[in-house]
Image (cartoon, rainbow, N blue to C red):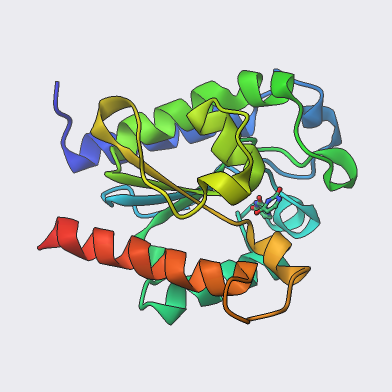
Length: 199
Ligand code: URA
Ligand code: URA
């Protein structure tokens, strides 16, 4: 059944309302706010990070802290505005001290991401960093091997892993072959593929 945009917006609000009161895992006890995700529902392009950090937990929005500001700039550098895409995380509540979410937490939170993907029906999912890449592709391969490559996923969706912006905050070099240099190559590839879809 193909739903119209109004119905999809409505469905997303319903999933969000459920997620905002979620108590299915212990992270719910520690959060200030659930960070559900935001952006355009009717988009081909979705970005999936790891989990909220302190700033996101405070503001209830994904990628608004230092790493998020870098992500926003990376997108801008190829002419992508955040409002044109959908941005979320594999885990919707902040893990204490920014530790990686556990496999249990990822599994418990998974249905929310699954619903978001089903409603948005993106053509491209960019996974940001090791945790979301491994969770979505169900692989143990390191991000250094996976990034910058296209993977076929369920429903004909293409998955493109990139480094996490917080990794780039710790790696400032822009010389050829550095994580920042590779990310510049990667985001240009995402833009190219996205434009191709929209032609
Ligand atoms: N890091 C993430 O993975 N997601 C956010 O929303 C913020 C920082
Ligand atoms: N390690 C990570 O967890 N993420 C990256 O993006 C790079 C290295």
